[in-house]
Image (tube, rainbow, N blue to C red; front, top):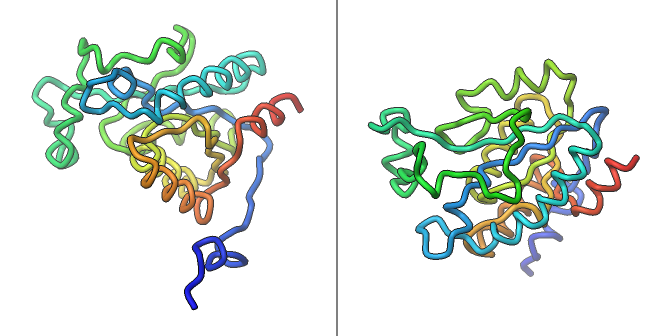
Length: 207
C-alpha cells in the first residue's frame, strides 16, 4: 500500500531545528517584476507574500535584528549571468533602470539597510552574504521572498551548508504556481530547515 508523503517521511525527515541565539531576516528578490500583473515573471503568490513580509520587516526593524535585502542585477551584456541567463532568459529584465527590477515599495530597503546583488538563484553564491552574517554572530536566517522553488530553495540549501539554521516563513514566500510552491516548502521543511508561520517569527522577536 502506498503512503502519502508526510507518512513516508515521518521519523526520518521531520526533525525540527528551531531558532538559535541570533537571527537575521533575509528578504530575497522582492522585485516588481514578480508583482506587476502582465509581466512575464508575475506570480500571484508573491503578491500575497509581500503583504506578509511587510509586517515582518516592520517588526524586525523595531527589534533591531540584522536585515539583508537581495536583488538580481546583470550588466548590459549579461555575461555575468553565465549559463543561468541562457536557461532563464526571462531574467534579462533584471538590469538597472528596468521597472521590473525595482524593489516592491512595501518592502523596499531603507538607505541604511544592506542590499546584496546576485546573479544566480542562491543569495550566497558569489556574494559576501555568508561572511557578513557570520561576522555579526548570526546563526539563524529567516527567509522571505521569491520564488519558493527557485531562489528561496537555493538560498535555504546554501544557508544550511554555510552553517546557519534556516527558518522559512510560509506566508512570506511565493511562487507562480501552488504545485512547485508546496512541493519545495515540503522539501525544505524535511531536509534543510523549518517552515514556520509568520506568527511564530513575530513571537520569536517579541521574546
